[in-house]
Length: 265
Image 1 (tube, rainbow, N blue to C red):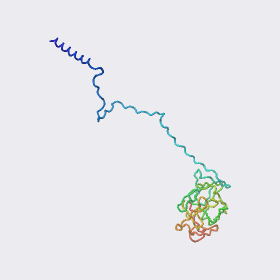
Image 2: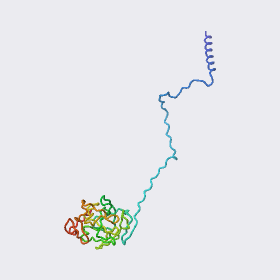
Image 3: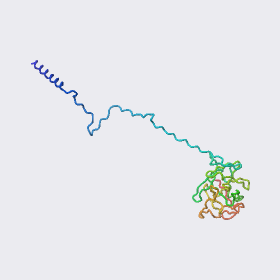
Image 4: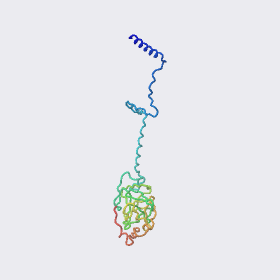
């Protein structure tokens, strides 16, 4: 009985070895596919994440530096009239205009301003309107508004040694004229320029068209456009006349006796 069991076991081993020996070369167990079936989401990798790729520093774009700011050119002397220097533009320093329109200065700024009715006109450095008087003369320059007239229409004065900085105005047409009282008055293309004492705020043009002879001066020394009569710019109710002060203020009285006080700004 024991021998019979041994024989059966040996026969089984021989059959197994025979089957293995008959297998074709290269064949074996079917490998397990790792490709996910269609519609299924592949499993996320369980290992540590790969580090991001670093750009080659040699290929990095170079930053373009901002261009340097252009320097503001300093004004140069464009013209000299005796002891007054007229420069080619605005001063490179902040200048403080005189507080009073009746006080001259060694430094004068001239600027331009716009008005929708009268156009472009000239102001001082504080924005105060400057006027010209038709009874003056430009060739040769001569100021005829003196005495009582000059109280209502104070001249723009320049002291010695003087500097004038025009902006938006040709410096070659800027100068000065000596007045009858010995003071020197700024001129534009030969025309002496004045303030109007009733202008109380920079930008006021209350003197425009007064008596038909006073007008805000334009950058070429000419007259600006007249105001319509509805604006009160062409009547005889304000201002003063020529050198004798014969104009009227408020419709009656001599301009010298009724001259407006210095607004002071």
